[in-house]
Length: 467
Ligand code: 6PG
Image (tube, rainbow, N blue to C red; front, side, top):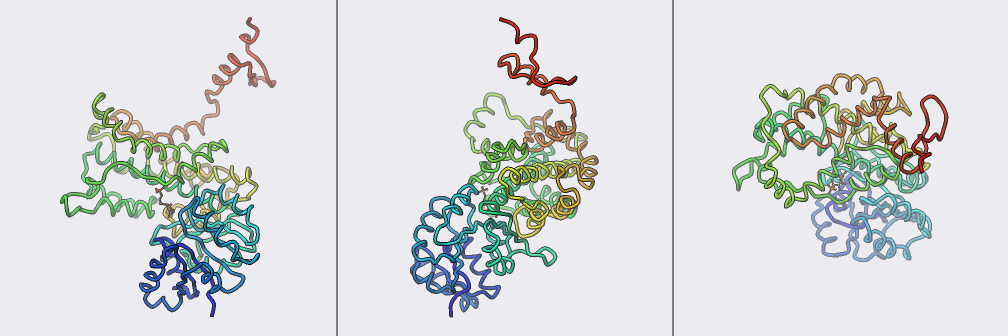
């Protein structure tokens, strides 16, 4: 008998996804470029092996799948995907479906969807890391509805469930799923950075040791900040390294890696003129962290920045409240970016559904996302920070954010994400901004013209008359 579905690429994510599919009762054929990997995978599949057909050639893979076929690609994003599609193409029938489940740039997915000729194509963003892939990821799909519907039974079955609802959905055409996954990753960077910043305040400003910080994060995980990233940050802070016999955080080099999805989010936001300063700051912070030698040189010249805070400067409660405000501001920006992309790309991205899909399985899952799904439904079309539930939270918490950012500025604790969130918040509640000065400058040097408050378009200042 033939398999329900095929999968190419048995790296960590591909292998876990294949086991997940097999476990949900679907027969699956697998293929990997290195045959040895395929056989090892099948040999280690235990009782799930009965559901798995290992194949040694692409021909054998294709022949073993029920027609019309569905084949998931889980290969490194970029050229490897194009190469794999090119190799598969001659073996496929027009109704066969290729599903790219890697972290593709959505522009590549748009291109691949447009170029799909002689086969069908879906791009799905899969979040949740190794554990998620194995036991329930969040899945953000893009492509034709009929193609999504065909594989939806498998994708819904393997996806994480939030109160019984699968965290999987079609976001729109072509690259829409990978776009939403990219913004997810941008938000992931920002959540991680804000946690790193408050960790820094506790470590350098309050002189706390990692185990004590772990306890604080654990505590926050029981309140409004409940989330996977707070939970794992507490776990990371709590681990003692056996070799060094001290907290593992104190032996991990402070240079952040990245594979590019956060950067893509920022680049796309700039194309769309959608402000996402918190995510921008998070990407910039990773870039800055990578310049270890330059930071060392900076410290040698200027002395180290962070100093201990006076004991009464901040409470742990202030920090928690600041994080709540920062998080709301970050998500308000992220959803506004999605909304901008939705109109610009003609996708009709379903904002409340996106929040729902993110409630479980993915890296940014949190209890706040459930409230966001409600707010985005009830207050469609408005910025999330203006929805009453979040507006009330912000009213209660922005004072603490201000206090934390001010203390950071005074005592040399860098808080780029939190500070940029605060600056954006203040800009967003200032009706009379300072861009009148920008307009005056533009008109002065370039005669670009300005609107007057007392009426009229395209005025020029008296300077335009000179010379
Ligand atoms: C997820 C993650 C995942 C991402 C890694 C690493 O949703 O499961 O976003 O897709 O690839 O977290 O990302 P960086 O290497 O860029 O930090």
